[in-house]
Structures are given as C-alpha cells and as structure tokens.
Image (cartoon, rainbow, N blue to C red):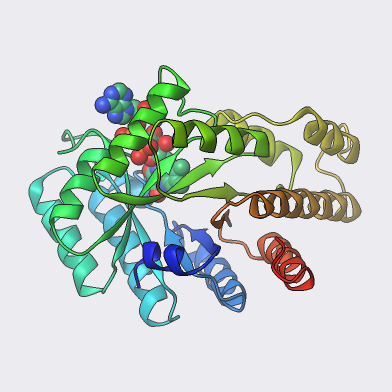
Length: 307
Ligand code: FAD
C-alpha cells in the first residue's frame, strides 16, 4: 500500500528505519530488532542505502537495500519504503535495474535522496539532486515518493529558506510526503513546519526521532549531522554520565531510561500538536524504540485520542 494513502486515512503513522547489515555478525541484531518491532504494528519500515556499504560497491549497496526491502515485505509482511540515492546510480542501466527490482519486489514506496558522496567515486552519478531522481521515478511508474528534509537546515544549504525552497521543488517533482532529519528540540520542527506552509509546502512532514542511549553517541551524531543539542538535554546527560568513561550497568540503564523518557516527551508534544506520525531511527536495535512507542501508544489509548 502507498504510504501517502495511509497518511490520508489515518491521523498518524508510526514507522521504523533499518539499515542493511554490513557484516554477517550484524544479521542477528537486525533480525531480532525487526521481529520485536513488528509486534508494534508499524505502518511502514524504511531501509537505508549506504554509499559505502559493502566496501563502497555501489551496485552491492543498491541490491542489499532492495533485497532487504523485499525480505521485510514478503517474509515479514511489513509495508516497506526503500531508500534510493542519486550517488549510487552511476548510469541509466543501474537506474533501470533498480526500477525493475523495485517492481519485481512489489515495492511501491521510495525515499528519493541525493545521498552523500561515496568513499570510492569512479563515475559521476546521473542525477545530482534528489528532486531529479524523484521526478524520474514518478515518471517511471506507480511509485509513491518521499523526500528528506531538515528542520535545522541541511548543512550545505545557504539558508533554511533556500533549503525549504528545495523541499518545495521535491514536492513539485512528485514527493507526496517528507521525513525529517532527527532533531532533539521540537521547537525546530514546529517553526520549520510553519515556514514550509508559508512557502507552499503542503505535504505531510513526518518527524524523525531517535531515542538517546549515550552521551558520546549523541554528541558524535549531532556533530555529524549538525543538529542542536538543547542545553537542558546536554546538562541532564552530563549529570548522569561519569566524567571518565561509559560507566557501569546502572549508569547505562539510567541514561537509557532518561533517553526513553525524553524521546517519549518529544513524541507526545509532536503528536498533540498535529504531527502526522513519528519515524524512528532505530539503528537496528529495538529496546529503546519499543519502550518509547509503547509509552506513546499507551498514552494515546489512555487519553482517548486526545494526543
Ligand atoms: P537534495 O534534496 O538534493 O539536497 C542536497 C543539498 O543541495 C541541500 O543543501 C539542498 O538545499 C541543496 N539543493 C538541492 N537542489 C538545489 C538547487 N536547485 N539549488 C540550490 N541548492 C539546492 N543518505 C544516504 O546515503 N542513505 C540513506 O538511506 C539516507 N537516508 C536518509 C533519510 C532521511 C529521512 C534523511 C533526512 C536523510 C537521509 N540521508 C541518507 C542523508 C541524505 O542523503 C543527505 O543529507 C544528503 O546530503 C542530502 O540528501 P537530500 O536527498 O536531502 O538532497
């Protein structure tokens, strides 16, 4: 089923993002996470595509995403959105193959992305912008296209306004909804959504949330993707974290519990204020995400849909 149809029918959708395992040892973690998170009846799951997966081989990266997408759709009966990046599509043949595989696997939902430059660059990709890929996919068949967006601005964009114009271009090229980069301060999402509407971006914008499970994990991530860490979140995590190292099991559990409560608080406020759902960045683990979603779903039930 197309995700945009679910977004029209339901007041909110919940989804999980997974990545194809890079090593054989990673497969059991992914399998366990999928099995556990499936019990929460997600509306869809999405499968990333890494330009550096499997030793930087673009074709392998593409096929691992499509293969995992096919398995989750047909073996696990999950609705799947495959990520497809411009940087891995080096020629028309690869694009044709990707479209053919999407159709063979019955994958109707695609997140059209530019991706970041691959470690090994032999050939220039055929598209340099996500909107070009979105337009091409839209012209090739009955795909539902999603786009990425950045409430705190994409790091390369000259301004937030220019980046919102880019989201509008992606919508005009066929994207029927958008998923945000993760953010830790809901004010970023609310102000972004308002600015998007003012500039004519009318598609649903699903917030991307990642439960924090450690201070260094958070600071590394935030630095890499350039998102702000609210002072109160940083202060609370610093208070819980020992000065020298990661800490023992009790410290880890305290940080994890705090991260779960923080993410659940974010979700609660987002849903109360009209967010069309939540997309969870799971990092192929299930515990923190399922704890957050269980809390949120319990509240939805308890408040008879007041969220
Ligand atoms: P684009 O929309 O092409 O934008 C890239 C930059 O160019 C932006 O700064 C934009 O403002 C600017 N731009 C675009 N068009 C124009 C124009 N005409 N004029 C001026 N400026 C322009 N990466 C992966 O490799 N694999 C994944 O699976 C993956 N999944 C993701 C999922 C989500 C939900 C998100 C938010 C990101 C994901 N990414 C993934 C990261 C993404 O590929 C990078 O952030 C990438 O740098 C930008 O991709 P994009 O699709 O937003 O690019």
